[in-house]
Length: 255
Image (cartoon, rainbow, N blue to C red; front, side):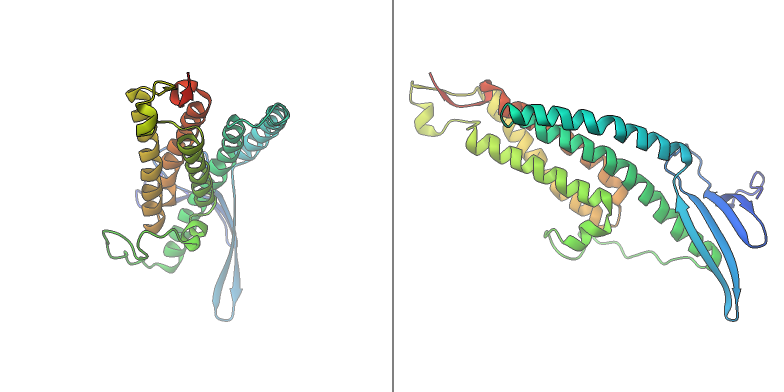
């Protein structure tokens, strides 16, 4: 298939009478583009197209090597930390391993969905109608399980990382007491965090809440690929909140 002179060509690859092996034509590099293989069968009611998609061989090998190298290291570190007492660092390592899988699987699924939609449109020669714009999609502010499932691995990674960040935020504020109460602030027996430390914890908590609304918006708008930067922010929040849990400067304690 030669698209060098056809600016409207959306797929490139090899096509013969019954089979094709193509990828979506894009103007940028993307290692997660699926390889679309298909076979056309003639039936009494018309042509029947069977399609399968898989990542490029390089991505399969890279992901396998990455996970194979990261998994035993993570398991060993987690086992060491657990044997010496629980630490929020365990959650960071588990979240990092889950994020590695989620970004690879989620990015491929996103590109596979795009390729499937465009291939159907090209084969049927129809254009899918655009959905009407809404300021806030239906369903209000509730997090629906259908929205999470609809976003695929990225949806599960988003809600998982948000749950970890929210749990760490609650742990820092309630259990580690990242801020003095009024009686404690006026009691010389207590040493309170500085105003900057308290403000930074509030900022982390506010960012955690904001990431929930932003991620929910993207899922409701059927834009799962936009969850990737939100998930990265949540990963950074997990690291910061775990730091707060370990740093005595953020905690209320007796002198």
